[in-house]
Length: 306
Image 1 (cartoon, rainbow, N blue to C red):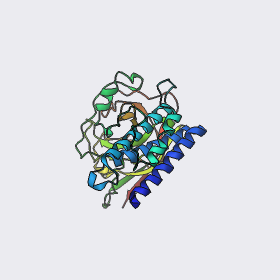
Image 2: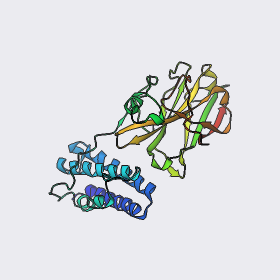
Image 3: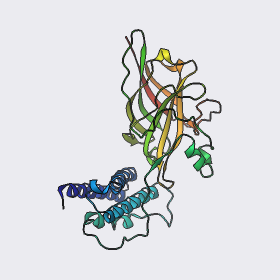
Image 4: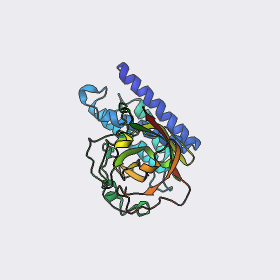
């Protein structure tokens, strides 16, 4: 066994045991997080090119199936108990397989197919897919097409160079309040600046996945550098924040809700803004609050001017 393969297996085994321990102790949020992290690592390895992998193609298929089981257990912890859910005792049967993946030559214990690579959908696509099942979250609709390159979570851009007499804006996304915060998988926020017609005025940016979850809050604590001087933003422009999360049962990343701030709200210091139901309404014509509960997106603004 190579050192790289040994290192992978030790790390994966430790993560697997950590997740099942949390699961056994009833610490469901921690278990879900651990399962999702390990599933991503296994899926990534399963998709590695043959000449860059420490594992054979058959072994990678088993890793992908274990990743699917982790996703199923994670989904089961977030749903109402049913006879079909993937149980903890089922998952524990996979630990020795993962530990001995290099010598495992038996049939996989569950009739299961690997989860395909995750797809992050363009604005509007996820609402079309979810319309029938998620009416409580909003109806179908189409967002503005992107005019900038495709992106993945964690595409933050640096601050622009300063210009005399011009103001740059940094927005710290501190946290978002949601009644089901602990159930959101791989949550992140897409930030865009739109004109009145919903057209992008700056490149779109995605935060990294949230740093932690606590009660009804998901914490980000990340700075967004707005990619245009405040004085150069067109009249009626707005800054949008789309909260997105992964849905393992449907196998895509979905927009859950959105918030926005308008130009007259640009001022230094803390602020909270209301959350609206999807689909994201970049033209701000038909806004519906997400909930009557006092849950908001918490921001802090810093202005930089020479």
